[in-house]
Length: 138
Image (cartoon, rainbow, N blue to C red; front, side, top):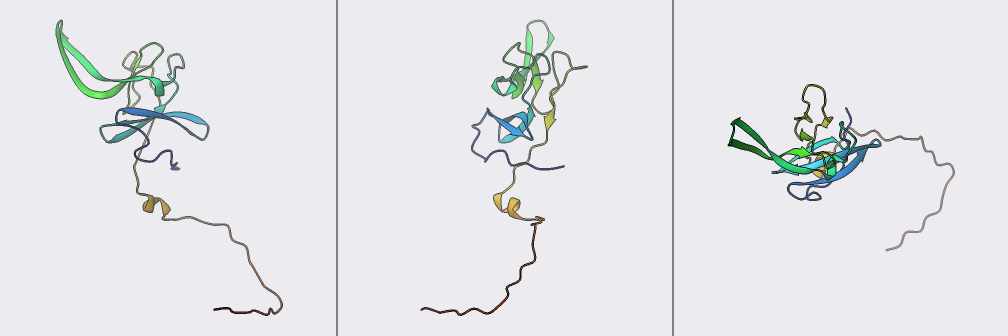
């Protein structure tokens, strides 16, 4: 598995999104309640840009006229046809058995952690031939 730096913390406002590309793939990156989530930017229904969708909550009903709201800003509505996807898993709530948007793991790291290895640099042998005259100045 490879990691790709796609944004700085603070680039995406709370309950906002940013379109990023990783290896040519468009990915919708979301910031919700201090957490970050990433799913494919292409809606599997008809190809709408999920990055431009609306973040809403989950609404369930046990009986007519009684609604329960939960998970604010964790359901994503496609801007084209309103299909809803869970931003944590990519699961479709319109057709959960056959349609899912691909989700990606997201982590937040300090810059110092990213600078730590193991990095491998390409090296070449270097040799200096002859003698040189140097002048030292104070």
